[in-house]
Image (tube, rainbow, N blue to C red; front, side, top):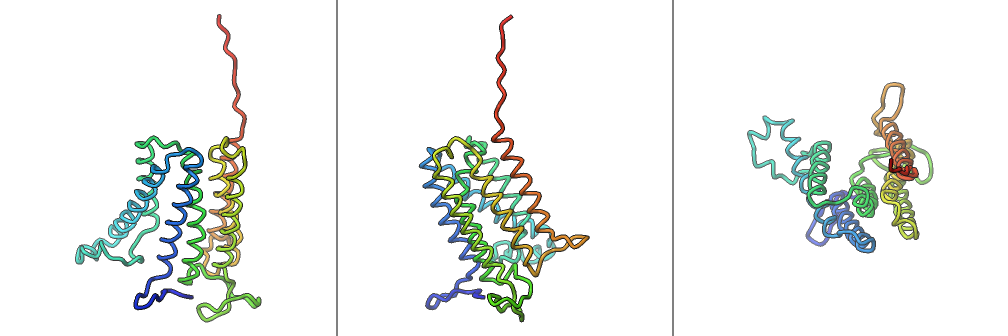
Length: 252
């Protein structure tokens, strides 16, 4: 793996750098996409950065609350650059809440906003795969296949590479779908397609993971969650495509 990227005298952590670059590139694509659809590109930009900053702050505060005694002794560690002292669930919840509050105040409609941010989500999914490849996280099971990679003392499935490849395929499919003439009339469909493709990717990749959380019965937690997300996305698609029933009222 390549945990650091050496640029002359600078040694940059590769995983965070991959995530930062994916956010920057994805946000640039989202801004262009939003402008073509006549959306408020500045609103999407502000929403994204408010969510990111709120998520980072929330992740650190949630982690500090769980390790209160340690942070009381060294309060300045709240501002540490150590990514290991972040609570991902707390960060996600904080980011989501901040995004909902800003979106409501800025009068951003839900489905068009999610569609506008889909390029960002799709590029970020690629960035997550690159970050995992750099850090060695989400590693695969041991294998004797010729394309296995040496990691953690064994030859393993390159699950990070699988994830990157499938995320790139999803990005291309979303780009093709966005160019379809009728796409602008189906609000929310592009985002739901991204959700379905991402859930499908996780269903496949989780089957080769060597660090999956197992539930009773041998079920993989990641695949169970992916199935639930996939079903929810299909349900949402049905709701969006279901024809509305209009009844004519008669004056009496």
